[in-house]
Structures are given as structure tokens and as C-alpha cells.
Length: 170
Image (cartoon, rainbow, N blue to C red; front, side, top):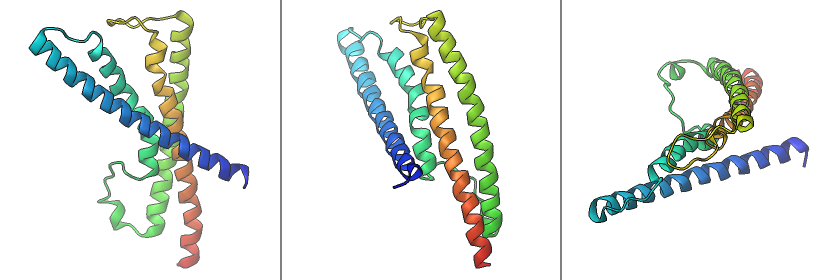
């Protein structure tokens, strides 16, 4: 097994694990908010910090699951134009959008890392009920963008390889 095959399998397991983590966080948030609502209105005893952690979970979920969703092609696509193109044009358009996505997410990852490190070095706390370091909240952004960018790079490579097979068939 070559390094690239091993790395690809490892990456697939990693993004699957993060997708599962996003799902578990969503379930925890759902249960936490429901319990908080019941305790607040029936017993006048809300759970402290449930809203704060639900907000953080809402930030983490899309960044943890985005690379997996892209890998599975489960994202929203406006394919009204794409379906009218031949296979080669579709692959070229998909290649272009994958390369664009890779570069945009790489830039977001770079700035996300800079902000996360800045918050860590300055020890910036959150302004909410629980004073936790802000870098723990925002670190999901560069992590998710990195995984998303790598997946876009993999998609670009797939579309580039598919161009060669399309030309051979036609």
C-alpha cells in the first residue's frame, strides 16, 4: 500500500469521525435545549450555559461535517446548467469549482489559524456565562476549512483524472 492510498484512507476515516462527532453534538444540543426548556418552564430551574454551548455546537457542526458532505456529494448543487453540458464540459466546470473551493478555503484556513493563535496567545475569554478560552470556540473554523480544502483538492484531482478517461472514450 502506497503512502497516498494510506493517507487517503486515513483522511476518509478522519472526516467520517468528525461527521459522527457533529451528529453527536447535534443530538446533545437537542436534548440539552429540550431539557432546559422543560426545567425552565415547569420548575423555574434552567440549566446554566445550555444556550452558550448550543451556540458553540452550531458553529462546530458545519465545520466538522462539511468535508464529509462534499466527499459524499450530498451538498446542494444547482445542476440546471451542469445537466445541459456534455461530460467533458461537466468535468471541466467541476474541476474549476473544486480548484476555486480549494483556494478559497485555504485562505479561510490561513486566516482562521492566525486568529485562533492570536486568541490563544492573548488568552481571550468568551463573553458568555462560562469564561472559556475563545480560541477553543473558533478553532473549529480553521480545522474545518483545512479538511474542506483537502477534500476539494481531492475532488479536483478526481475531476482532472476523469478528463483523461472522457477524452479516450470520445
